[in-house]
Image (tube, rainbow, N blue to C red; front, side, top):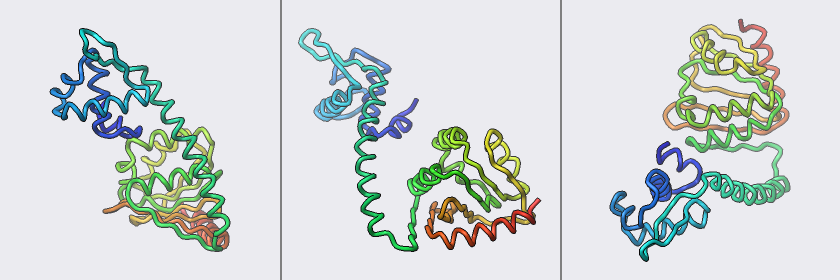
Length: 239
């Protein structure tokens, strides 16, 4: 376990550092923690207070000094659950607002790792998909190396069906990734494109992880239907 992994749960760098120090070496004072982590003592008190509020840290008083211990790490899930419930409530309200102002054609552009994650969360709500790509390197697996196993587990649990056309050199990797899923895989000779596209529901996602990752999602029933027809014709030609 390192600080970066703990930050993925929503803690700040300093919160993660202090919490791990208390978890690994319980029974320290704020002053001792301050010296070990080279963080100002007054700031350490503020950080510990925030961890106490999250239910992650508690203390006892010994010789008129507060000695800190970690609480049950499960409390981190409770904090995340509270945030998730609040966010879900906000998201539902935003979806209603967006629906009222929805255009016939919707285009959204996402950039960076957070953009890829937003796209995958949307993608995981579908029942089936068609993907054409993976002809070059598979940098998306590197960008999302900590997240991808969790996404794949959810993907398999939902039994999402799919068709994937990739390059001969990447077929083995794709077979390994989707070996426990309902995904059919074919190859297209000389496929070298670094740009991929996926059709799901009434949407098409164009994405690349070259240089700065980006995803363009076009939501339109006619466009997705036309591209699905194109994909199926290509699928029949693939091996």
